[in-house]
Length: 133
Image (spheres, rainbow, N blue to C red):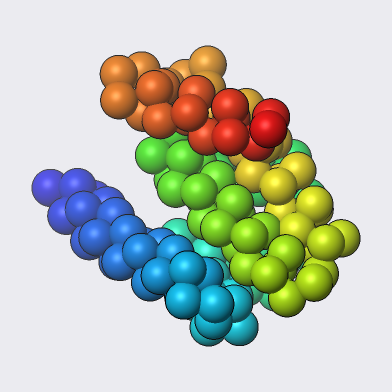
C-alpha cells in the first residue's frame, strides 16, 4: 500500500513539473524549463541530478531496472522529461545537449517498450515516433 501511494504521489509531482516545463518552453522561458527539468529528473530517479546527468542512456535503463525488471512507468516519464529537456536545450541554442538528451530518451523508451502494455505501450510508441521525426 505504501509503495502504491508513493508511486501515485510521484506521478502527480512529476506530471506537474512536466506540465510546468512545457508551459515554460511555450512561453519562451527555456531557462525555467531547464531548472524544472533538473528537479523533475532528480525527483523521478530519487537521485542527485549530477548522478543522473552523468549517466548514459544505458546507465539510466540499468538504474530504472534495479530490481531486475524495467520500471515502465518511470521509464516512460523519464523519456518524456528528457524530450522536454531537449526542447529547452534547443531553445537556448545548445544543440549538442539537445541531441544527447534525445538519444538518452530514445534509449530509455526503447528499453521499456517490450515490457509495456496498454496505455503505457501506446504512449511509448507515440514518443518513439516523435523522436524519429
